[in-house]
Image 1 (cartoon, rainbow, N blue to C red):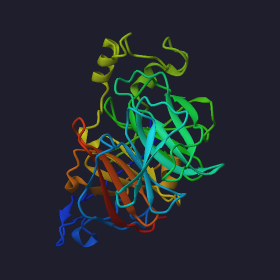
Image 2 (image 1 turned 90 degrees about the vertical axis):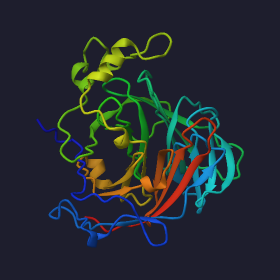
Image 3 (image 1 turned 30 degrees about the horizontal axis):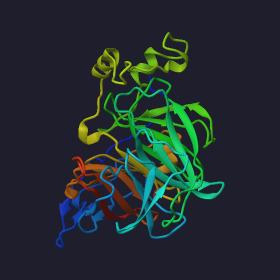
Length: 363
């Protein structure tokens, strides 16, 4: 049975891979190359063109660059972070130059995987997703929120924190999306099944712990997300595993238990490595949502993403960047994309890249 809230993500009928232009940059073919909208009856979107701006830059201090976001407070500045070690954020210019290192006061770091900038009562805030869970064993995840600092600040104001649990047991995730109106989403990576999309039931509330709401799953090959994650069906509310199926599948050492390993093996529809979601972002005007993998960036209409009926409208192949491990993505209102990634090996510099996309109107 098809769930009304299922997230429908449909790929373009003729997905284009990157090719090099005459100046050496990488482009996605325009409509004259045969790329068309998948559903002309429902959208006025036409094919977009994205151009990689130069070569990726190295980030020596950010070896595990996991997320990236445009500053709202300081034009020309972007924020990034490592996924472990110290709770700090790095201020970069929007061309990739290091500007400063800022300690996030009161925050802890288990596995920071993504960052967003969005409105808050104090103006604009950083939202930091401590959501990584490689062994699917965390009892809860956390979103830290802090007023956006100046790029030359030494530390932030005291961070607020909101915790969340999954309705179907722990999952590994690397992407958050925060929209201007306060809607917050977590998108799982897809190592134990498809990449699932979950929504916070409320806007940010400091000190609260909430249960995420399942929206749907990311369809990498087109189609409809017809069912909830298998563990939600097996361990639903009232089951022996506890309320809403929240349980910890790790042994005393913190490693996944035999049950967790077996469960990961039997879940159907596991995403291929190149389709696993590693980062997300939303345009400041609230029109676009982007999700990225190691190989491509997918574009969605934000209003459809919120309603749970999102189609994958556009796809941009980023393999020409040759990132060792592509992780984060941010999108500006004018279609500028920022992409960051890990160095791929211990102590290897992270990477920073830009792309320019001509975004069409959508309805």
